[in-house]
Length: 165
Image 1 (cartoon, one colour):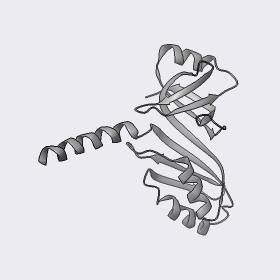
Image 2 (cartoon, one colour):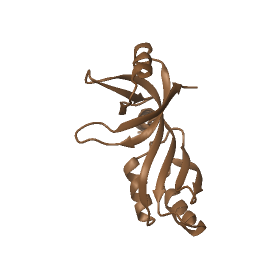
Image 3 (cartoon, one colour):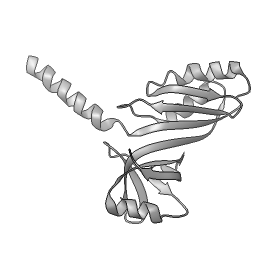
Image 4 (cartoon, one colour):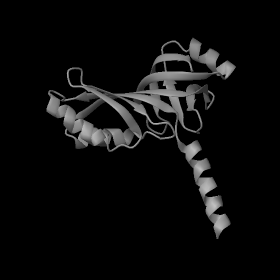
């Protein structure tokens, strides 16, 4: 019985380390924030998301900035739900993902989040930097607005790519 607890604990620790996507930062564009009381309302709901920390909210700009706790996975659907549950509308969701650039189904560039099998397709006007990173398999930080397409992995409209620190 004792060894099964150790085996289970080891398996859970291994699973948790691989299940946490390497999304490090998030910026949430929110429509409807107009006063400090709005800030308190949305802050209360977003603090219910265990993955988020260091919330910074600006009602003047309609933005929430946060870090994703190391080892935690951020669920964009949960973010959208919490924003709506607080009475506001999600305008956009910008993520910074640490990972490697590679090809998905031969035709699309994607970033594979470090430590996971999670892929984000990359939409960009100039794929030359991304192609170079894909060839070198270098670890990169990709920032972009998250969106989805039917029957495809989630995607990012790339705003910035740099070598990961």
